[in-house]
Length: 394
Image (tube, rainbow, N blue to C red; front, side):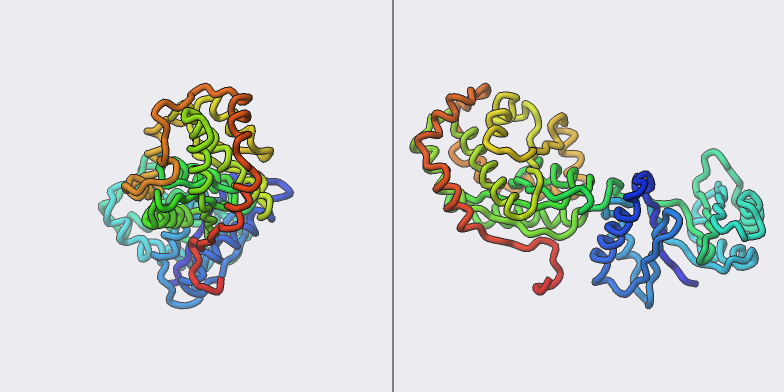
């Protein structure tokens, strides 16, 4: 019995004339994500993508990958039968035997996309339901709240039979929403911000600021581990690691202590913007949440954003910490984020940071620094680390 994976599209079906572009991007993302798992035929038809193994590929692994690809509303494993009622009736109890034995109530839903099929959808459901009850005498039909929904889809290339669908990651395909530079730390927030923006189709260009010897190699590895988790959803990326020690020491030596964090973050934004522009990005992404810390008040955020011209996306801005942590647990980054390896944001933290900084005074304080030279020095010494690449040649 041949088994495939059926993928249902979500908001992609609303994209009008651009729909085919979105579908093509999703297919490319699927191909890349499952490429190392074997050989597959991937086909798009009637708002559904089918993944058919060409050999003895393990569909358990494929299904796990599929569940984390943005742009997929739902998916299910299904068997393929001939478009004949006797073949459909034979396949249903055989393929779904374990599921049917594990429940007491069920219903059948049928979809007849191929209008040349002689029976209409209600007639297909009635025949399949009666046949299943004949084979599994313990079952009863519950059309309102069944434990199992048996679905029969009669399509152009065959009849597909499956149980209840599994919810997908949703969103739109990565790459269809542009490219943006992500300011990534080792904390809880920025990996969640990355996931949120990837869900809206944004290709991620991560930038991390390191301050050796104040921060360790283990802190950098923590960021790599976080991005590896995010890459399960967003796809592969290349991390830029920026040496930031000199800038922090200059700010500490020449600027008011209470403005240290604001000036530091303004430098981060400048550097991220320069890297973003050089690499085809159209925006910056941060994990800021309004009022969470002193540098994330309205006035502080305004001072930080004033350092750049590029749009800044803050997907967590209205979330509280409980909501952010819930997502971090969902995407499996939380336990990594709480590892006790400090990042550069915790270095030289002022005892009494200014929560309502005045932009004029911040810019006045920065006049003691050679901003352009410091930024250029950082960019000249950026290091690259590949995330989610399977082979060194990729």
